[in-house]
Amino acid sequence: MSTTTEQPRRGKAPAGERVADWADGRLGIYSLAKTNMRKIFPDHWSFMLGEVCLYSFIIIILTGVYLTLFFHPSMNEVVYHGSYVPMQGVRMTEAYASTLDISFDVRGGLLIRQIHHWAALIFLAGMFVHMMRVFFTGAFRKPREVNWLFGFLLFVLGMFTGFTGYSLPDDLLSGTGVRFVEGAILAVPVVGTYLQMFVFGGEFPGTDIIPRFYAIHILLLPGIMLALVVAHLILVFHHKHTQYAGAGRTNKNVVGMPFMPVYMAKAGGFFFLVFGVIAVIAGAFTINPVWAVGPYRPDHVSTGAQPDWYMGFTEGAVRAMPAWEWVLPTGHTLNFGVLIPMLLLVIVPGVLAVYPFFESWLTGDKREHHLLDRPRNVPTRTAFGAAWISWYFVLMIGGGNDIIATYFHLSINAITWFVRIGFFVVPPLVFIVTKRICLGLQRRDRDKVLHGRETGIIKRLPHGEFVEVHEALSQAQLHRLTAHEQYTVAALGPVVDENGVERKPTRKEKLRARLSKGYFGEGNQIPKVTAEEYRELTSGHGH
Image (cartoon, rainbow, N blue to C red; front, top):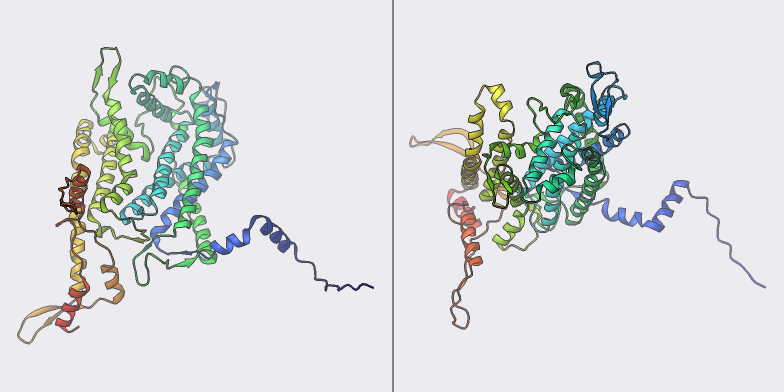
């Protein structure tokens, strides 16, 4: 005789719970969410710059998918018979004709085009400002050097994606930009002509450049950028978010709000805010009106042909460079008027890309850093970044020298010479001025710590002297002004080893010591107030 124990029958679980259990059993979603959904994120307005970039990128993808449904990336010539009357009967490529159709015949097409273009501009502007925030606050230090490279590569790829995108309509303005690129390719020594024939599929403009740009614009570059964005966000999660120094904040903790539900709710609202602002800008301000300049013809150049702002520095470098060239005995021509600017446009931005590794080598600091610097407390780095930005904007002035000359009634030659001289003079001047400002702000902070905040109240002492009343700072304010670290100058080390044998320092060691002195030596940072100084002063004054 056998007996069985019957288990009490449970009610059937809801469908949503069953689906969640099924997914969790196979994908481990619950455990993953439990680990990461309560992750803490600090709250500061400057951190939203990265979110602006992310949301703009999402908007670009969404609007780009819509535009691909109606765009024809073909250079076959047709006669236009669409609804835009001034262009009827004009011969043009299918790419240009489909752009007109999107703008005037597709429902919502012009608005989507405008949103797509404005989102691209805001995406790149956001990345530029976001990278400068990361640079000036030292957020690129260990363990985030690789993430800095990811961000820098995203910015460079974003520029190329934008260039291939505004070249697709095949209008007279974008065609002039493509002609500029052809000239840069031809300037490559020896192989330039072969590269030009390969890229354009024959003599310029050829018949393949628009389809090739289309494939690069919608597949290759966005795919790489999407992978970099995902990798960037994964590393942000893995490394913890940086935070500004403050009470209770250290390199071993994060003070802020949990990812769920607080940060996610704020992020969701901010996404729709960014989307709404871009939509309003797109609806109110026309950009890239291709119908106003007409289709591209190789024998025409549009008046005031300017690239988008992020590519303006490239054209400025070429416009400012004198037309120097050498004809080699082999018959090859070296066009330095284009070749040197192209080399500079690789080298100078590249210096900024590898800067985190340079600073790590210079300081010898191998620790992890999760607290951010105040830019004033690292004056040489801040001055270097400001000089780099000034170099960028000087070249942008060169890229728009004809527009500036027209609107401000100036000589275009004078503007060109300003750019040529300013390329070498303005960055050093900006470096010196920025460094002096940072040192002045450090002195003011030191004075605040020692003497308190000026209240503006004038008091007369019994013996007739007038003094200003100072208010002591709070502990939180004192911590904010004194929590930063200051590096010491790297020494060459003993010239005699433990065995009494004289050791000759290497050139690398001498260079590091010299650069370290320039960064952190006397006159390059103001010593912060020590605890002993503060106690001695406050005890003497009786606060």
